[in-house]
Image 1 (cartoon, helix red, strand yellow):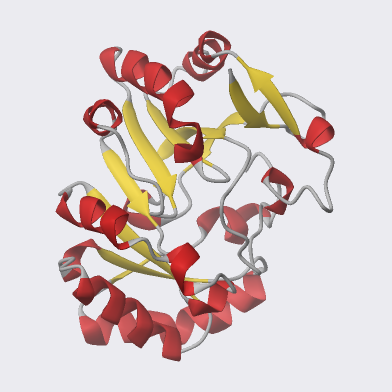
Image 2: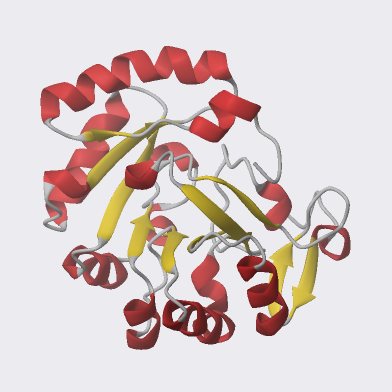
Length: 235
């Protein structure tokens, strides 16, 4: 069984929208949001998927079979799936059969991960794109929790893995570039994205961050779903 986040009305959080972030921004996609995470980012906008001190897991998450998840995903007739969380790879054993089945049906699968759990060979073969988001000091996580060298080395070797960094202030750009350089990640696979859950914050941070990306030859990522619909579940 997969532990899936719930929508506001209680249904599993499986929905169709557009990818709002990263190199696939703007692409029509189906989303599967899984519950639980091994990090505690201070600015996380999906704390309902893991913060059981402030949220009731029985209200916020539900156990769903991979067969039921697949039925829900395929019902949208959109052959692109974004698996997000929480941290999806914490449920890798249960997730792999779903990803393998959908891959066999022609789905393009993206996985959003914080880069602390290594993917299995089977999972890697089923996933077309990894959106790896190593956390910086601005996340509030201790260095040993947020940076697992042996795992980041695995993702650095995958040509279909893009590293997406959440940026709060200008100094974060140097930290992100330093981390990517340490693991030998090419600049065309490094993406910088402003942190923010309101249009105003994203606009303010986006202005100077976009200039920094242009100067350094890096990709800039918007947060289209926030710009369009605000910080709402199922969008």
